[in-house]
Length: 403
Image 1 (cartoon, helix red, strand yellow):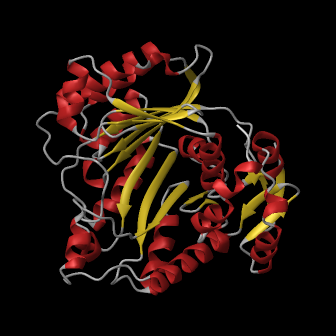
Image 2 (cartoon, helix red, strand yellow; image 1 turned 30 degrees about the vertical axis):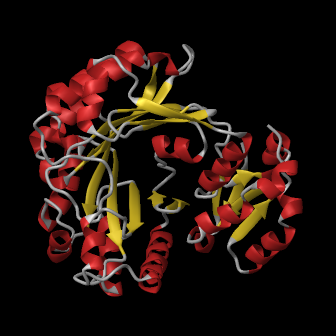
């Protein structure tokens, strides 16, 4: 464990924090957000069959973890998990508890849309064991919500968060999107202030991106919509950081912010290269040595489960893969990466190989070195993927990397 000061605050690394997580992909949405490239279906016709199949996959893959490994986080993602009924959530959680060793302090996150969060539904979520809500607000502006083809209203965005707090949820995170072509700076600043005034302790803010095979990508190609502007988006990011700092919140990952150390336990495990199992169509798993990828097709997933066939393909990771992934994920978060540990594990001396690059990045305030801990500044987090890729081991550095 390593503690350091930044902007007058104390931060503690959790690089030795062990955690095992389960991700459950619910591949259904009421409507398709036109920028989204996640796997989902807008038809709920086979929802009950998928829920049953997910339970079967949980049973089949229970040996993925060692008997002494406790599940510290369960994450319902999608898609839109809030299309599930009470008994469907209960049955899935039942399959987890019956087949895995779950920590008494488990974090159970449930992604949901505002229009699904009636008081009755919120009470049901709390009753079934959900203890952390991730609400996809995206915006408080009616026109922006319509532009994104969201299914909720601006009023529902605010009301559902207050209702969740009234019901008794203490851990609430919301999503916002910036970089929208018609989102002006002052409106974005007001949006952040309004979000931070809500009874939440975590915020995820993402820049609008144009992914291939999405309606947004096609509309841009047809000259009907404009693509995201990098300078415009960068300006929104700067405003976001200003408001986060002013509110005394922590910027602990590229797109994630929290109040009083309320980090997402599940997502932090991803960034710190911890083991997790993904179930459901398109879900990914990671066991430190390999990654597996479930088929991204609901019908095929159901067919494979029914036939007792493997639903996933496996990619074995080389030492070089593991090193590069450690850099890619670790540098996204405030705890950074331990260069001494990388040297010890991979025989890869970043301090020596990239002394010139590190010196330059320090001079422009992109990176900081605390002993052997390399981390990015708020400014540097904008270039996290670029910096990580510059440090990657490749064939030219193969002599510096051991397995």
